[in-house]
Image (cartoon, rainbow, N blue to C red; front, side, top):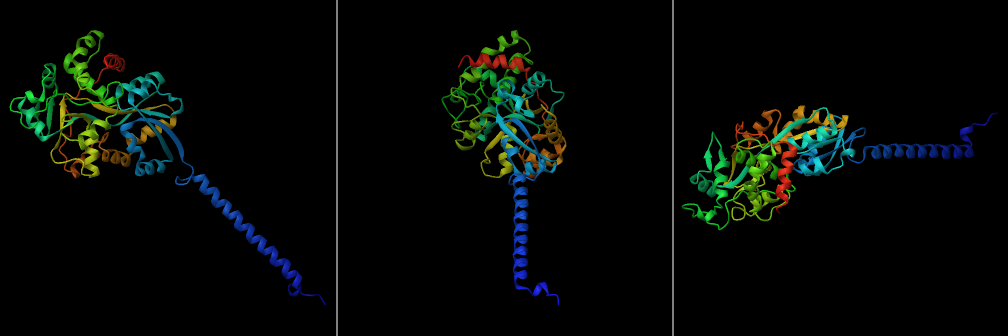
Length: 373
């Protein structure tokens, strides 16, 4: 009679051992698959994303670091990594070979990069006009002095009237009837260092345009305006290298240290949107007449960088997010919705806008001023 194998104790022991080993092996293999998936994802990022690298003006660093922005790019299969740098530095001193796109904060810098790298196109997904951040008592003083004028829903800063006062070396305590701010220092707009900062270059573009009666486009015009515009920087004394510096002084130290500060409109709007109470009721924006737009212009260096430019220019989600950081977007509805929601008084359209000089002209003037420091 044939013996039942399953009743044999030795067979049962061997079968139990094999089954246990099989289950253990399956568990190990499954664990290996899970580990491989996690490693493939790089921790937090979904698998299969294409990494795109860019060098950007530092004003956009918070935008690219925002998780909501990262998530939108991820939906399109991209992981965008950025390094911040000054716009002048991006155009003249940065090795761009390791990047897929360059994204300076000014059109002249982008123009030079496009020409040097023979890029087929550029994208200008958002911009920010240059403004003067100040306080109610200063607005009243400068209104009486003929520098501040009321516009349609906003106030303007007459650059020619300001230059006339600055050329005379006018001090604050010399303004007639000044009891609100009798400071014994020159009436000057606080800027950044023209040797380092894009915002200072934009200030030079504004003041040189007014001093020349048009865009500076020749070396003769440069020689004509440089003595006057140089003093606007040199008479300030120490200046900081980044636009965040004087704007933070404006927010924290107040009118005593910085009664007039050149800033990007986006810096002010961004703080209002944050709702962190740094913008107080007595703080006001003045729009220089004329002003310039800081055009954040992306130059694709490779195909992947071109895709980033397309998304920043055309994706509605990215446009809305850019507006929450204070930027005026290619579709004006995004910015208008943000300022309406926050009850901000800013012009929908700025009419008195001029173009900056060509990159080479701007660089020559900046270098001439730098030599005097």
